[in-house]
Length: 445
Ligand SMILES: NC(=O)c1ccc[n+]([C@@H]2O[C@H](COP(=O)([O-])OP(=O)(O)OC[C@H]3O[C@@H](n4cnc5c(N)ncnc54)[C@H](O)[C@@H]3O)[C@@H](O)[C@H]2O)c1
Image (tube, rainbow, N blue to C red; front, top):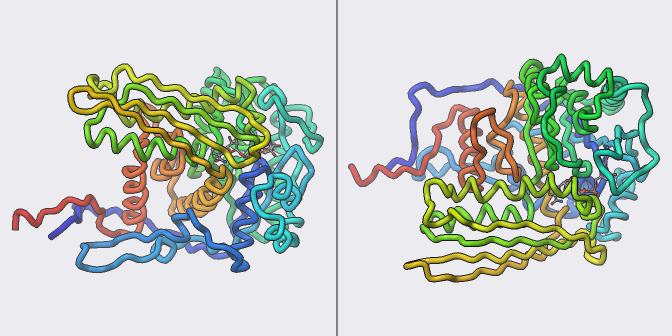
């Protein structure tokens, strides 16, 4: 009759109330962030529903099935209401949020027209940008300073000024900027002292996204990374997050093709079906696609996209099913499609006695429509985590990412159903509710 696992020591956390305004600071005012901001404004005006958002639509079962307690997540934990969000962004282009959304062509002009007033008020601040890290685009709205440390200080000034101007009590930063080129942690990333020295000396190994993250963490602003860049995945910034008691999470929003992969792969493994090959290819024509044409940025994306199958399928445990799996991912820039990406997957699987079968997926998706609700959830959950005094990497938010950050030495969990269970159990744990394991003990009564 149970299905409920009772911990002997039930942890509890005190969560400060979500009073006052929450400022959402976004490096990158492109397709994803403008679709997110416009969407929140549309929902506030009753012009649309927040489809795809767990915080707005999701429920959570509490206690035994017989208790019939299934509140909405937003009624179970104290989340900031949409009416209390203020938005700020940085970009190398001068377009305000209305112009950025119009240029991105994700949302209908008629809808954007109704949102023109709040969107036009959001002017991007001057960006910290380095064309060695994002190569295919350039724009005039950039900060100039004598060193990377001065750039970080200028960002901190922006953050303080934004907070005061908008009367915010709390802030969250989420990277929605272009994908930076692939790079590995260097000596300058190994400690906070080395990183700060590197900022003063403008060490070329420090990426713009790391300067934003440093500025946020110094001011105790939670930070999420929506792109596959290295950013906070280095000892210096992990230490700073823990030292300043700031929650962080990343990286790379799990939206289209990888979302499909993490739905299907656990299913194949659950039934002990083999996979011989998985070929994934995409065409997309937005600015993100243009940046990903650069081999350095594509390499960052490829790494996060490829890591998923290996962890889910566990070829070491199941060599006869997955040992020699051939996995390839391609992305091609194809301007006519704009943000309406098409992702094809050809999956060669095999069953009983090794007999082969094939599955073809053709996902005609909309990248930013899939990403916008993830941005909203991450902002609200990170703010919740900070009010609950949770610091460092928030693994319970792995649900949202292609390459979830984990504590050093741990492998990331990619199975979306395990990720969702972990997320909901964390919320139950925060509120002192029993964790649910779906274990049925009725057979023993
Ligand atoms: N849409 C999705 O489904 C999805 C999924 C996973 C990850 N992402 C990632 O999210 C990010 C945003 O995607 P998008 O479609 O909005 O891209 P986009 O190109 O429309 O927007 C990115 C914006 O960032 C700006 N930018 C680049 N470097 C900057 C810097 N240093 N400071 C400030 N602004 C900077 C660019 O000028 C651009 O306007 C990309 O890195 C993308 O790979 C998107």
